[in-house]
Structures are given as structure tokens and as C-alpha cells.
Length: 332
Image 1: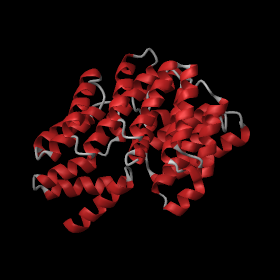
Image 2: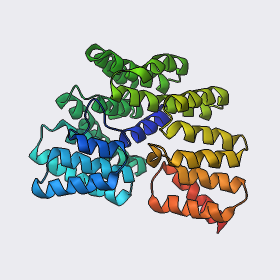
Image 3: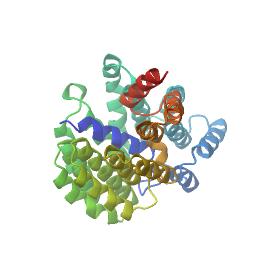
Image 4: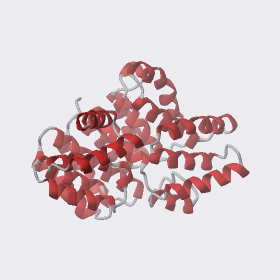
């Protein structure tokens, strides 16, 4: 299953950048708006203010968690963990805090070594499973648990059979949500045509949560096709997504990657610049990709500055960060 971890990582990014949804990740409509519009500093300020008045408040804890995860600073992610643990100590039935525990520790595990990550998986799995058990109607929680099952080996309580069963149970409760989860399982098994058949109709679903998840998973599917050198099928998906959701960044970013790999680095830079002004750009490694494009164009000064910023922020896939450090060392 070569794309299992790719899709899980993309899915995690989608969760971190998730907009306000039918499932109400945050119950306060004003806070949901801040999350949807990626106004993370304002969301953080509002959450911290409530936590001063109501320590360990579940919604404030989760809102602060989303704000800190979205920025992706390792120290801030680490600082979120004791806040979530305090919420669970005071409100053990708060499903949203269990889910956030899985989110925070999942991000920590992505940057940890294999041995350390394996020591964390029990709590990560428990967080996601309890999030679903305590809030079974929350699709956002079900997506997180399914992504865990797809990413984790059987010895860590994961596996595709568990993912399929979760998708089946979800379809019984809500058909569109179940189909979306089925598509995510299909992508993890490289069944791209089956996944597309399930996902494209969901872009018109009544549930905004399902629409958002379908968009993200189609973007992940296109990225997987691109990784397999299926350039034209990947381009077709990205172009359809860009037309369907012109205000979102992922498809435009994907088209930029295709242009760069075709040698059209200037066109890639134009698309990356366009993506920076669209929703969801905060979760994309635009500094890294722009740096690679500038290197293709021979501008090492611009590439160096972007790589330095990318590394200093500490956000992004560990392989991208490792490659960025290696390129900076070569550039001197």
C-alpha cells in the first residue's frame, strides 16, 4: 500500500486546516468562522481569554489546539498537550478533547523517531476512538479515526479491515459520510478510479463537512497519481477541483507542482503565488516548493531565503524538512 502514509499525512493536514462544518468542530459560530478563514491568531486570543475565565473549558481547549496545530511550531504543539490533558482530567466525557489528544500526539509522532512514535500510538488511538465513542455523530472525529487506522499497522491497532468496518458503520448512520470514508480506504489501496467514482458526487453533498473532506481526498488522490507519474490523470483532477472550488488552494498548488516537474518553473511560481491567496494555503509547503522552482531558474538567493524560512518554521513533512536542510548545506 504505497500511498497509505501519503494519504494519511494529507488527511491530517486537511484536519488541521478544516473549516467550519456541519459536524461543528467548534460549536461557537464566531469561532468556526475564524477557523474557516484561517484567522488563527484571533482564534487563539479568543480561546485563551475564555480559558482564563473557565480553565479547561473543552471548546476553548480545542479551539486553542486548532490554532496552535495550524501554525505547526513544534514548541507550540508540545505546549498544547498539557492543556488537552487538563481538559480531559476535568471533563473526561468531552469527546472533542479526546479527539484533540489524538491530533496533538499524532503531529508529535510525525516528527518523532520510529521507536518513540510506537510508544505513543496507544494514546493516539485511544484519543481518536474515544472521540468517536463519545461524539458518534461528529464526522470530523470519524475521519480522524479512519486516518489513524489507515496509517497505523495492525500491531498498533490499525489496519485496513478496521477502516472498512468504520466506513460501513458510518454509512449506516449517514450515507454520504460513509461513502467519503469508503473512498479514503480505496485511495489507500491505490483504487483511484473507485475513489473518484465515490468522491466527485460528494462535492455537491448537502453536508459541508462531507464536501470539504471530498475536496481534500480528491486532492490527495491527485497527489498520489502524480507520485506514480500519472501526470495527465493528476492534472485532470486538479483542474476539475480548481473549477469546482476556485477559492481553495490545494488544486492550484497541485497544478503548480505539475508545471514545475514539466520544467515550466516560471508557470509553477505563478500558480504558487496564486495559491498563497486562497483558503487552505497555510497547510501547504509553499516556501519549499517555491524554493525548488527558484533553484530550477538559477536564483539561489531567493531559494536560500525560502528554504531558511521553511526550516526555521519547522512545519511540513519530515522528508521535505530534511531535503531543505540538505539543500541549504549545499548552497552554503
